[in-house]
Amino acid sequence: MRQKSSLFTIFLIVFIDLLGFGIVVPYLPSYAVEKFKATNFEVGLLMASFSFMQFIFAPIWGGLSDRKGRRPILIMSLAGASLSYWILGIANTLPLLFFSRLLSGTAAANISTAQAYVSDITTPENRAKGMGMIGAAFGLGFIFGPAIGGGLSHVNYALPAYFGCGLSALAMVMAVFLLPESLQPSRERVTRGRQIGPRAILKAFTHPHLSLLFVIFFIFTFSFSCYETTFPLVGLKKFGFHPAQIGLWFAYVGVVTAGIQGGLIGRLAKRYGERKLIILGVVLTIIGIVFIPYSPSMMILGAVLLSLGIGAGITNPSLSSFISLSTEATEQGSVLGMSQSLSSLARILGPIWGGFGMQHWGFGFPYLTCGGLLALALLSGLRLLNARVVVDQPIA
Image 1 (cartoon, helix red, strand yellow):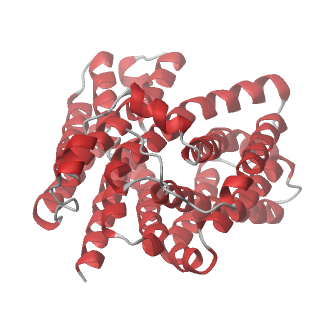
Image 2: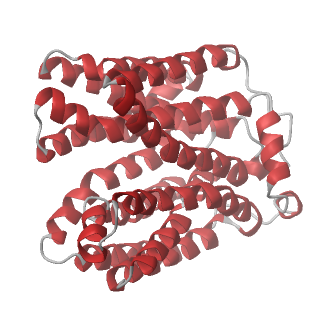
Image 3: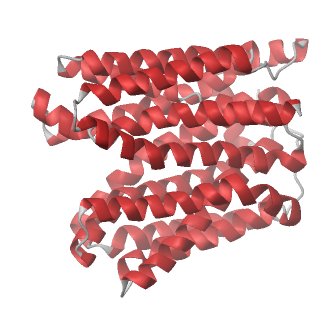
């Protein structure tokens, strides 16, 4: 009962936190242009600054949570998120707007700590289900957040920021009063958790299991973020979709992904195991990615995006679970932080590749290259995915 209560609480905290982030996404570029006369390049930097800080701080927060516990890191990061939205609301210069996004990205790097919390309170058999709940909260935040933010921005550009500030403050209060610490004090945790930095990262990438898992995780996120950036252009040029229709297609994929992660992934993992699910998920993702620009009708496009949504819903929590299962208990925060850091880096590079490839080589090129990279990553990892997980090489 306590485990279920803690899982539900961490689900609500992540959902509220990501809802606050999703609220500012649809209006931030136009806000920067209209109020601060930002150039297109400055808007790109503004949007990338969030992911850049996640890339830097995800392993730092994860490693600190191995030392200090998950609860204080979550509380501190949620307080930082609330402050970042308040600064966004009062920003009267472009540098202050950048500062708010840098602070917000720093705070949002707490997802690895939330995943480490889940790994603390779940058994190996239920690990994928717990990671799926985090993924579902993440997906639902991105489904409902932009819709709310878009509506509030019609009233006032500062209103969504203040709403996000309140949501993060609510999540922080929930963490203070409803979330127990998941780590028990131990000498091993204190001494091992201190080693955070380049040496720990290098050790992780030379680990026989984790290195390939990191590669698959990076390429998967790279490909999905490439789709997120280029699909509006494909929808506009090929099908004549207007922005509202594109938003509905994104919501369609998001609902499918969240449904898999929130309701089915636990049962699927118990029946088939994470290895088979990763293989199935990546194959479905490849089908979804490759055929998007070549869909001859909206019905076919719907089937292709369904494949993508199911693939993403299966792959993400299964990879996170398998990474966790391949990691010692004292290093969960650090290693999951590294995986989230790679995810942030992929979200910086994927859109750049998608836009560049589409501009120079046409609509199909980014999707074909992403599908090819996913296939290579999967083939490289098949031997690992068919092997037994043995946690025998400490990271730090």
